[in-house]
Amino acid sequence: MKKSEAHKADSQPHSLLTLDFNNLMAGAVGGAGLEAADLAAIRDILTPAVKNVLTRYEKGQLPFMNLPFQPDEVRKYQALADNLKKFDHLVVLGIGGSALGTRAVFNALKPLGPNSPAGGKRAHPRLLIADNIDPESFLALLEGLDIRKTAFNVISKSGATAETMSQFLIVYERLRHDLGKTALKDHLIITTDPEGGVLRKIVDSQGLMSLPVPPGVGGRFSIMTAVGLAPLAVAGINIAEFLAGAGACQKEQTSEVMANKAFLFAGLNWFLTTRKKRSSLVMMPYADSLSQVSDWFGQLWNESLGKGHLLSGREAATGQTAIKAVGATDQHSQLQLYMEGPKDKTICFLRAENFRQNLPIPRLFEEYPELAYLGGHSLGELLNYEQRGTARALAESGRPNLTLSMPQISPASLGYLMQMLEVATVVSGALYKIDPLDQPGVELGKKYTYGLMGRDGFDDFKKNYDRTFRDDPEYVL
Ligand code: PA5
Image (cartoon, rainbow, N blue to C red; front, side, top):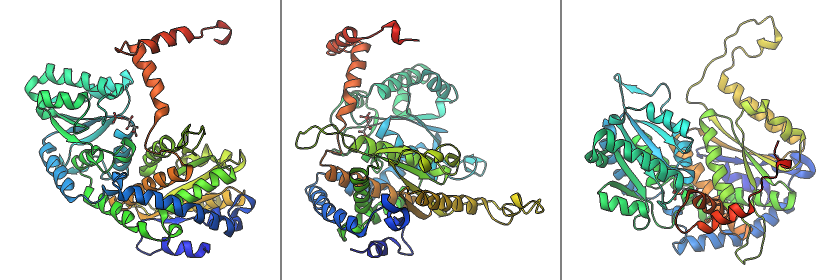
């Protein structure tokens, strides 16, 4: 298939997202780029991989792909949002997939301006997300809250994550001490597995408010479940439009593999990684509000694709390292390396054609050519021209890059983008022949932590830690 054909489907005028990969092609970047034969090879390998994913979807093994189509859930979370309007703050306690998606969407879509006051009163509780256990920052967060006017959404699918559970215990104790046991039912919302886990047992025994994480949906694929939708609805985000955008992406999936953005994104990056030694993918939004999308994508891509074994059991070391950068800021810190350093990266730009608010640059000091060219433009124009200029410069230096572009940052375009990247992730899993839904590599460190913290059943890890611990002063300065 010709490149121009692949482009057609991606350049519909009303598309919520376009994917432009001109700067991956050899015509733009030279030897590092792709030839028509490479696109044909990608198509050949992508076709069975997509078939595999769609078969698993049809068998109900990839339930995240159905999440955009759930109007009842939207009504449920909107009702919850109405109930929680009495609070000043909603604090999410969660980590990894229980926090990153919510933060990405909230930062991209939160009402512009200082807390969006309506008639002098805040229209929605302010959303705060505590995804670390640094005692200094967690204490500072708690001390800045009026606990009588704060609700806490504890989010843990397993109900066993040490970080979230420690936060839960601290908050539970504070609420009970400051407001009394009866307040717990009002101030705590627990999002966890509908059946298993200790958190579910606590919900049942204490009669706490709870929301389910649907079975089969892992943390990093859970933004369109209660994990993301409930706090986002409480914060005033239009979750119906967000899901509608995701649904628009999901409905595109029966088309020709190279004309589907999710499949193509997976195929291109897999080829660049495995055949062109581009082992890293820099996700570089040109909008501050999209900067957290890079963090969410980083977890999705790295935790899903970085695997030590193939499905066959054979040892491997798969994946492509996702790196965060933000334009234009990181043009002045990281770009030099991307232009002239190791030739191991692909850059993925993420941009909006139009900004929701813009600022004209005044015509001043026009006698100085160094400043005269700025006046009469806007900051949004400057930022977008910087993105175009950087993409061109990278291409000229033989550095492959592609651009994801939204007409404007909106709930629908963000929903589309996130669903597209989630689907691309499972298709990539099929290309690498690994399981993109597990994360065995993070378990060992957890077990050592349990051992060191004295958890029953993990003594061997403590013993092994003590036995193998090295404190040779020669290597400590
Ligand atoms: O994507 C994942 O599965 C992980 O990042 C989890 O979201 C993270 O470890 C938190 O797990 P849990 O929701 O069980 O507390």
